[in-house]
Image 1 (spheres, rainbow, N blue to C red):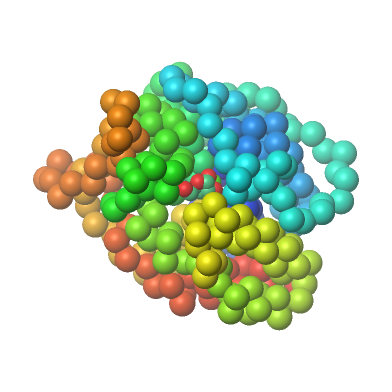
Image 2 (tube, rainbow, N blue to C red):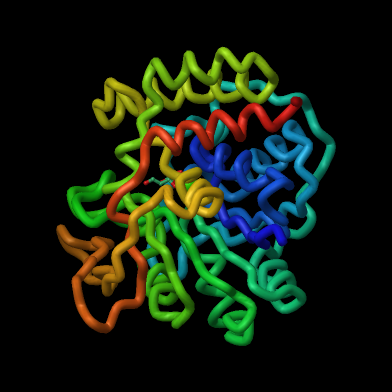
Length: 306
Ligand code: RIB
Ligand code: CA
């Protein structure tokens, strides 16, 4: 039985390959994609999600989620993802519009009509937090939550804060205290999967439409990562690690920890405290099989347009 997934994302160059992996019908029943602001405005991340699923011929509803965090001001990340949020690849002009502009309600309805759903978030957790607050009964339909965010070490936007958590720390705390099994994949792991020149040439040799998209998008992604963060070897392909961890149960080594988010404004704002405590609320990723990850990416790119 294929695992049911709702993917909540802010595409975004790395989110794009979380969508690519999640769209493989041989592994998953991708029930819904919801979007939020983060890498770009929610209008742009939604258009990017539509372009991606149309281009990859993935049959999934796309619904526009929240454009604003619960409490703090909105932040965007054009310096990495560009003006469109997915700079570097020209998609055909698709006439499709999003299936709903109320992503939170779509998430609630999809969960209430399905059981044992894995909710994967690769952006701010605003949509999921609002869905839980508005309809706590959905928790009975969530098998587990997997999120890309936080770090057991330092952040990327500030020394303490990782971008997804920083976008909406209040929402992150609501999700972390919801009581369902949660898996956290932080920068301490995703900084190990860099899109190096060897990775780009390996994927380029597949020579299909999906590999061309990968190469074009990653060329821009890497240039922006080098300019913004000084990452000269290649940018970290953060988000697909979430889905890859579902394709291969042995990809990630997990450690039960107690995770909470700093909400007080100051140098530690939005830091994820990952503590070895009996009262754990989260399985935290502490190691990854990097070679296996790139095998999963290659296999995923080959899957499309075979
Ligand atoms: O910090 C990395 C995260 O922020 C990734 O999800 C990336 O897409 C951006 O949203
Ligand atoms: Ca993202």
